[in-house]
Length: 116
Image (cartoon, rainbow, N blue to C red):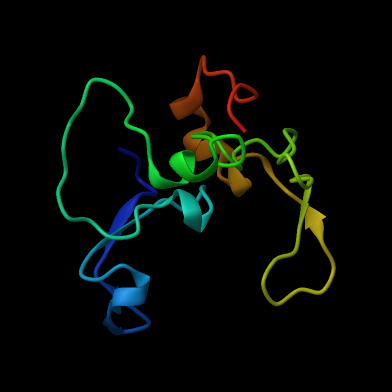
């Protein structure tokens, strides 16, 4: 529950294509695409965090907090710098991808180094 989070049903003025998560997709801009829900079949409220596909595939590389803290390197590369689309040179990666002011409170008390 955050003001930056929204449900998308379209893309560039057209209906959302299947490869982008049709018919509906959750968008969380402070997370990388692999951390967003690709397509929604049902919503369940649970007491404990379920294991997701990326965590099953390689929990060491794609933990729940993945990419929110650029000071914690991915096991195979640094997350300190990134290349923004349309730019040639890399820039410093910002905490929470630049949305720290809006979302840091969601992670209060969590050890952002615990999970990659």
